[in-house]
Length: 411
Ligand SMILES: Cc1cc2nc3c(=O)[nH]c(=O)nc-3n(C[C@H](O)[C@H](O)[C@H](O)COP(=O)(O)OP(=O)(O)OC[C@H]3O[C@@H](n4cnc5c(N)ncnc54)[C@H](O)[C@@H]3O)c2cc1C
Image 1: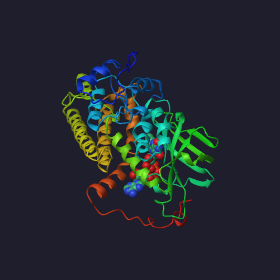
Image 2: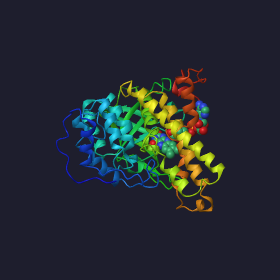
Image 3: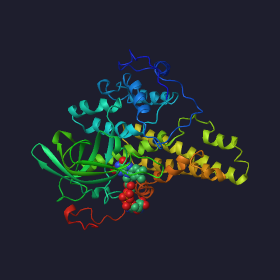
Image 4: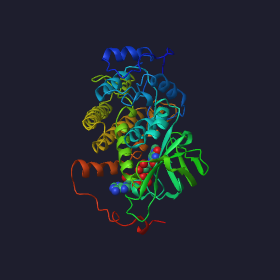
């Protein structure tokens, strides 16, 4: 990532800029993108927080990272159209893998702008935009993954505080987060989707224990989090009491919308250009074989279809004032299929050299299987597309109207 040290000035005012003005301003703080530097994917293989932090620090005074947010919260009060043009322009410059900061910027930030109190927005948005505070998503539990409404972590009111007890698992970024967006059950007498509430939990509060889960690709930020009688002030409750499920749906839709895009790597390339991974394969002579060429073209087609699907989902979202919808599940499915096809092809064509850790594409190969699980599994995305996009009959949900406390549990 190449950030220039020149301070940003004069770009704070929420004035609509032309494309030339955007490029001029960005050129004063960022280096141009080197097309030969491959994009990294979802932070895989590195827990270095410094590169992303420096990038966000360079962008925050101009409000370039989150342009639609207000100036005082690290944005520049841009219109959606200007924000899209800024996002496109940023693709021309050297960037950083913002994976560690992704939950804050892409999930918590939009939710707080929608549902947060003015005090919460003042407290949390700017540190998200400038990278000084990292957030993680504490949704999944041992008995609540695809069936997320089954969350069992309890929150019991005690005056102006809540006492949270339970355990979370698969918490990405837990190892270095300052805040966790935590879904907890505030009323077990209600059906499972209705008795849930969202909280912001300081990961350094007494009673929080974060244990690392090392992934097959070597990532060490993945964790399980034990929550033992953790006291959270009511002022850190996000949204209404009992409104946790609505926020969860909104957050997951934002997550799928963001997973379906640039973070899967390679989508900064110019429209119509041959992607780097494909020209790299051709240059290495590995496409001399007709069968290999056929597989490469299949992966390329998936890649292109993914771009169109992602663009369609983004356009649909823009038409709803930035509110993501179920089409994000289609975009996520496409992105996963394209990513896996690419990763497995590169590995297969590496021959014996592919057995070495340092072979090209090894990290992507090890990361690929998780793509079908994180952010909701492929099967669950297909259910969403079937029910909410195609209008097919819903799955039977026998425990939907039963009080959570009466549902038979696995243990
Ligand atoms: C790399 C990674 C990062 C993650 N990061 C986070 C995070 O930061 N925060 C967080 O809260 N969670 C996170 N998760 C958890 C993730 O959201 C869950 O793993 C996922 O939702 C699946 O839940 P589960 O693991 O409990 O599997 P289960 O829900 O037990 O599913 C097991 C299998 O059954 C299938 N299945 C389940 N229900 C259905 C159905 N109705 N129809 C068809 N098939 C079904 C699933 O597709 C899957 O194949 C992460 C997971 C991974 C792998």
